Amino acid sequence: MVSPILPNRLLSVGEYLALEEATHLKHEYVRGGVYPMAAVTGRHNRIAINIVRTLSSAAERGPCQIFMSEMMLAAADDVFYYPDVMAVCGAVDLGTTVVRDPCLVVEVTSPSTARYDKTEKLETYRGIASLKAYVIVEQAWRRVDRLWRDASGEWQHAIIADGAVPIPCPETQLTLDKIYEGLAPLTVKELEAIGYAVSPSA
Image (cartoon, rainbow, N blue to C red; front, side, top):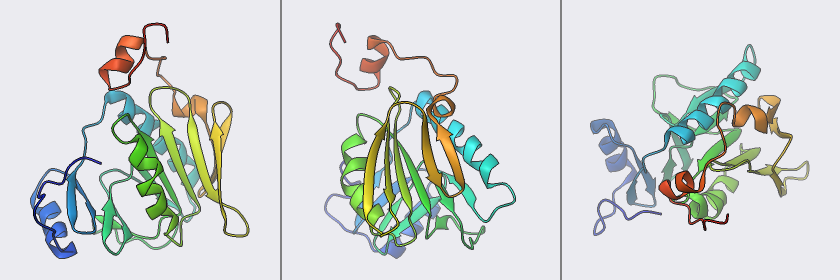
């Protein structure tokens, strides 16, 4: 995680929400610390749009609503994130900027966020009672980490590099071809430009 914007001060939830309302910048909030959101690449944004398009189509006339990263998630009483994609299948107040009780969370990861997405965020997301699946999408190559609650409530994990990712809400399949539609494989130079350490022989 990046350094907090106020390293010597913790904010209350109310102070954080007031800050978000007053600025055009986005920050995540973790137990009093306020952390700036990293800028995203066009590739990252395109992947998120591809996912939203597919999920929105599957959600038509159903109980689930799909949200992008402009919406804040109250992941815990003292943790607020901006996931790349969320599905919420209960009542949502569309007049607020905060979403609660998601059924699905999707994060498109990058070199600067990968460790955080797969450790601290994962642990926080597992604590959300309504969450049925957490999907981590690698932006640089075709790889998806699918984490989901099984019928007994235990969390399972699978890595998917081809085919489709089962999505519980809305109930559908998210194919890797759809996720990466319109995106060519990255060259070594392009990988290095977004922060990946790649040898010339890779």
